[in-house]
Amino acid sequence: MSLYVSVDGKQIGPFEEDAVLAHLASGMLSVSDMAIRQGDASWSRLGDIFANRLPVRSQVSAPRSMQTPQAFSLQRPAQPIGWVASMQLVTKVLGVVVLVLVILQIIIETISLLLPH
Image (cartoon, rainbow, N blue to C red; front, side, top):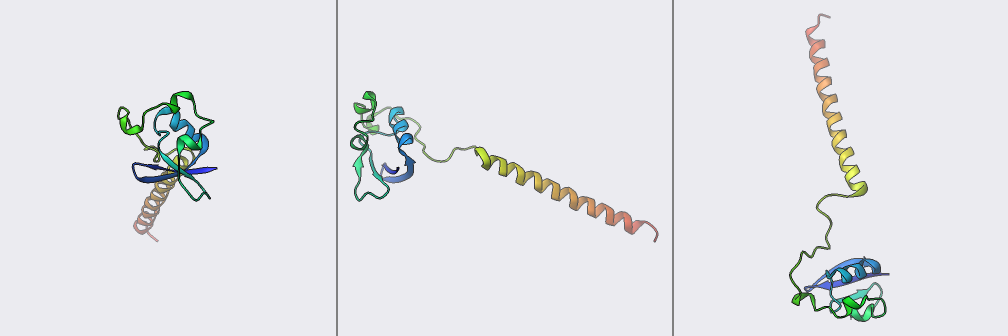
């Protein structure tokens, strides 16, 4: 089931439970961060939501604000991945093909104007 997480007063997500557990284990999220499952009426601590599924290390970790600062980004990666990158490449190639066809058309029209009829 998907969850939304409140990080520094901003709601982010939705995330699958496995992704949230991985972020808890890595320290990107804290057990004290608040989250809500889609369809639930109230927010709960991640530590309470995953009480029986957390590794021991995450259960005793300090809140994120007390940990050593680290890069925290749950946004899209800087480089496109998967089919997005493929579609961007296809779009660029098609753009070049269209440009070449336009140039060829101009050359053919110019040659036809220069040749005697």
